[in-house]
Length: 94
Image 1 (cartoon, rainbow, N blue to C red):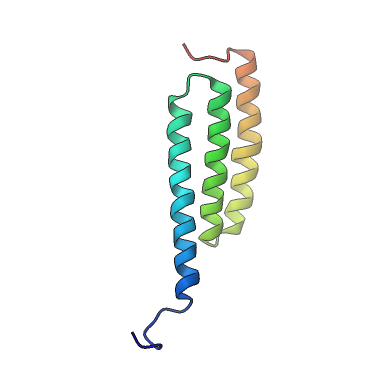
Image 2: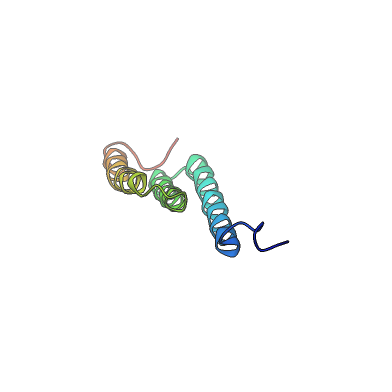
């Protein structure tokens, strides 16, 4: 392939796509684990890991403003609220 027809940053773009695919796959796996887990505290932890994986995906898609809001809400506020509610009810799902 001629040099003029090759997309700019070929190897770099491919590395970004691979990291994006891996982070989305990690997010999907931890989403599944959060849904199927009976221990609610573990489920919150899995949900936080899933949120970090999706934040990495948003960062690679060049959306830093979404990353800042998403991490603050999904990892910080959301997890803290769920842990507070789990403490008030029960740790294990029946």
